Image (cartoon, one colour):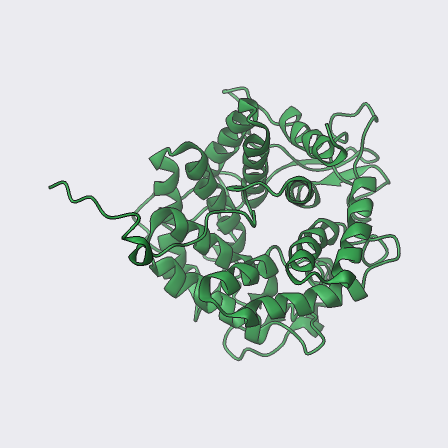
Length: 397
């Protein structure tokens, strides 16, 4: 087995070995979110992390054919389904996905999107219509209640405490969920009212002239609010990791036939390469999630443009990522996961954001298979109007 596939397999197995499977355990389907060997701090995955685990395991199933990965992906998907609000008495929440547990009274529309995204890919892998029904239910909720003026809301609290409304750059990846939901449902609303406005706003409003990201804007005035929050660790992290927004821009370029979307992603990738540590990390190793995310962007854009700078950055980033994986510690909560930032105590700590992004990055570099989460070789949209001679409709009735 080659080095990259072996690393991916260790990550997938780390997800699985820490996943409760007892049917009497309410955590069944979740897995490890964060863990510090020094303090003993341990948390289970929330909605979006459980969704990311599901998609990562589905990618391993696609790559290897091992049914265990599919079975465990379905367990993760079923936990996501347990978080979905199915009470129709309050239309403002019907179809949304709670943040952490079935008791949670809060959720972030962007986080919930990743959870629902997993259901899209579960349907693609299994053709079980229940998964698509649930994803469509969420997509319809998000179109109606989860966005303002073409951009996702920040956070919703269902107990009357008041919502959070600012626009964050990291919400941009929502556009890719809408694209994938369109591809399996055929409903063009998800492009017209979902992906297209998000892609346009991200391209036009969330990048500085040097290619760096505008992290936050006011919902109504659109004023840049990034500077007011730069003492916040997460805002700092999202300067380097936009949670798939630039992957979405590349898909927008393909779908809309407009290279300005990919050019915006290219400009950010160059900024990211310019701000990379000598060892391949970012901000003195304080932003590990950007390593896996950067690897994806350097790989996709470097190969598309045959950009030597990005391909060199890809090589540095890959070596850095491999060096971050725990192996041989004898601790099942560490082995296979990837080292987290200093926000967790001690040298021996892991976090699912970094690790699940690492899994998909490794698979993309190793073989770039089709029909996987974030795959560049996935099925493209094809208007059958242009292929009716070779693929005619069959009118049976």
